[in-house]
Structures are given as C-alpha cells and as structure tokens.
Length: 286
Image (cartoon, rainbow, N blue to C red):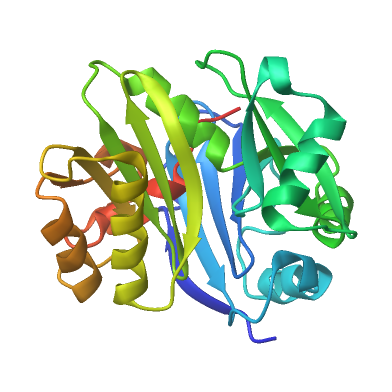
C-alpha cells in the first residue's frame, strides 16, 4: 500500500511555545490519517501532516500496522514524544442514541441493523457534551485499536461526530436551520440542526460531483429542507472553484465557507483559496 504525505506544515523552530505541553491529535478514516501537533496552552496548531492512500475497502480490511509504520517513516510527528494523544475515528459506522434508549446490547443491534455485522470490530460509546443526553455509539477496527494501544497506550479515543455535534449545540444562537457539510477526499459528513436540535448526522461516500448532488437533494427531500433559505456551513476538501462546489452553491444559495481562526493555524494553512480545507480537522481539546 502506497502511503502519500499530501499536506505538511511546520511552525518556525525559533518561535517558542506558550506551553511546554503538546497534544498529538489524529483524524483517522479508512483512507487517510490527519495529524495535528497542538500547543495545549493556546490551542494553536504547531504542525500538521496529512497522509492518504488509495481507497480499496473498509477500515476493517486495512493493515493498520503497515499503514502507521509507512506513515511514520515519512513523518516528523508520529514518533514525537508528546504530553497527550487524542484520536478521532472518522467512519460512517456510528449512530446517535438518546440516553434513555441506550445500552450496549441495543447499540450493537442499531449498528448491525444500519451497517451490517462486524466481527473484527469493537463497540465504543460516549456521551456528547452540550446535548440533551445524546450518546454516540460507533465501531473501531480491532487491528486499528491494537496499533493505537501499542503506539499510544494513553490515547483518548472519540468519534468525529462527537465534536461536530458538540460544536453545533455550543454555537446555536437562533432557531434558524443550519446544514453543516464537512468534505473529505471520498466522503462528506452532513449535519442538520433545526429549532436548536440535531435532526441528523450522517457520512456519505462519493466518487463524482453527481453523487454529491444526489445525496444533497435526497437530504432536502427526506427532511423537507427549504434549500433557498437554509444557512450552509461548508468546509474541508472542496475547491470553491470546482464543479462540486458550484453544484452545492446552486442547490443552496446561502453557503459560507468556514475558515479556521487565523491565530490557531500556521500561516501557510490560511491561504485565501484553501483555508477552509483544514477547518474540519481542528477539533476542540479533550
């Protein structure tokens, strides 16, 4: 498997950290590893690396030991001693459950009903802050979990839906509906927030602009969205000049590209055309 380091940004070595504590934060999907080195004092990114490989199957089929070994050989961050490690699993196999409907047996049944059986996976769950007792239930590949436990024994594990939903509830200042779209190389995460309440969150795979348009139109129809009046926050790997972005903006006239706060990222990450590329990877510290 050929691992490619697509993006890498490093801060000036002469610039001192405001804190000696550093956090290594991962976003891991079935075909990418994003790694951020974060100053735990000012919560700013000190370095960022993005690795990807051809999409050949699910995360359960990946040889994670080989992937991490190959990425580490080309990385300045993966073997760096740090104070803490935080891992976010970026997978579709997750379901949000109200607390009163949650138990591990039920969570297993929900995931199996939606995504099929998974023998070589471990069930995880976590309470979502800022919400009315929502639980995020998800799976992680046993082979990936083994690698994380070996390389980073004290890591904190979570799912990408959790900070996404936490942020939506924290940012909600009105009852106006909002659709949040986070794009990655082969999938996007859509989150719909209406009347100060999460309506749904889901990951959609795509291989073409037509796939993206189909999914968005289906979301509109399924949730009776008035596309002309809903506010859309868009971020991630979607070029504002490309056909996919044009398609989204034709469906939703009120699109805003969500850039990170400039003081929280390295200057090279804040270029005018691509600053929104990295917003989805900048998650709150645990």
